[in-house]
Length: 76
Image 1 (tube, helix red, strand yellow):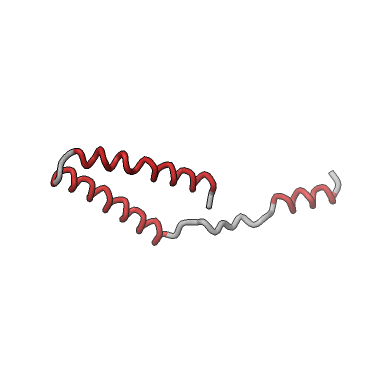
Image 2 (cartoon, one colour):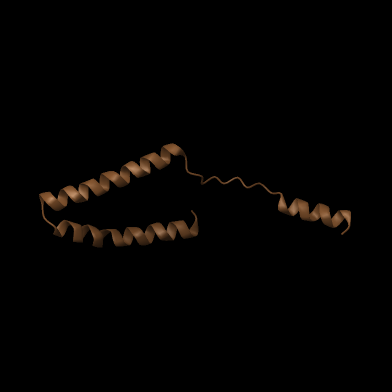
């Protein structure tokens, strides 16, 4: 290998790996708190109103799961 080829391969491999989408600890904590609150609300509704609340919640969250997977796949 010549020096030019080595320099080219090094310059290709060394690029900025900075990602703007990195989660912050505060964001992760807020998301987990939101998840716990939603789960607690569903469980409370299940006991206070009836077990059908769990089924309605499951059906209602299916589109949200598809949207979340779409957003995670696209990366925006």
